[in-house]
Length: 160
Image (cartoon, rainbow, N blue to C red; front, side, top):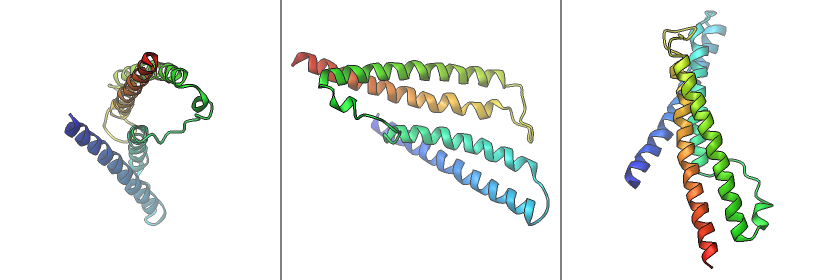
């Protein structure tokens, strides 16, 4: 299982990097064509926005995995272990409810835009919006792991 997880995270990291590189190349090409060649290439702007969205959502999962998101814990760190574990469980549950709602909304958005084409090229807009449920599903399962660790800590502090 660890080998699969390592492979999956490697894939996510490479996809996020590829999205960044594609976005960078498209933006540089857009500036070059517009100001040097004096020809406007309309699809580069929209394609760069698509890659930007994927870069953001995939990068969000990587940041969550590495615990790089902002956390204000100066109050939580002062709680006794049992109360701290209980609060962490409540926070994880609230996060799961929030993520489930956003994942559901993302799936609805993918379905709703499946027949809508992008403005500059012939691709369904659902390919853009599928980045939301994919990346937030990763976050959902990571938060589920946080809940499990919090519950285990709470149960451990109850036994002592």
